[in-house]
Length: 284
Image (tube, rainbow, N blue to C red):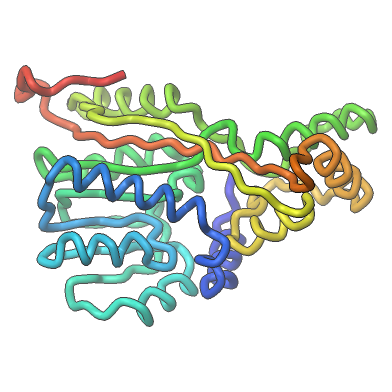
């Protein structure tokens, strides 16, 4: 389980320096926006989940200047930052956890960039979001896949084996695969009496390079993405030191160490089953 209070504090604390370290998240946001432009939709009412520093919010405002945008983020520091950057009567900012919120409006587009991995109950939250879509409304999101930080996970496993540590110690939460995500999205449709029309899904990999593992961990901390598990074990400093030594040795490339980001994208609609046309396909 994610400790939401811890998550809220970490993202708030790092709001003003987030963009400096969030290169991959910006790439993911650009990919989401490109897909929406390619589909040539013109949403009038948009819900953005996890607006962060407002990178996607500002792009949505530029692309759809007539649309009403509701931007939600769990961290008050992020909301304060966006409020200082965005001047538009068309943007409403809400500080809150979407998993606990009740929204009464309907939306033509629900979009979220690199946020869904923080949900404690993905299926329940997705089901709630589906009910907020207008007919033919679009749900478009990106999140991280199971190969994210594979180097760090491998080093944790290797050091645990070397030190004969049998308890489950990991650097953070686990992530879905693309197939698992699509399966959950389809199941939610069936449960809601709707057909999940996944018109686009993809995965990609981004790599970042650092002088050493310590610098990589520092960058993760600066975007608030370090371990926020509620049952997180306090690790012995010697264990972490061994992990960093292993990482620097096993993943060195041209005097740098690599970190993998596995990015997942889904663009979809939920449609009443008796209203599905021949042109609507589920692309698996």
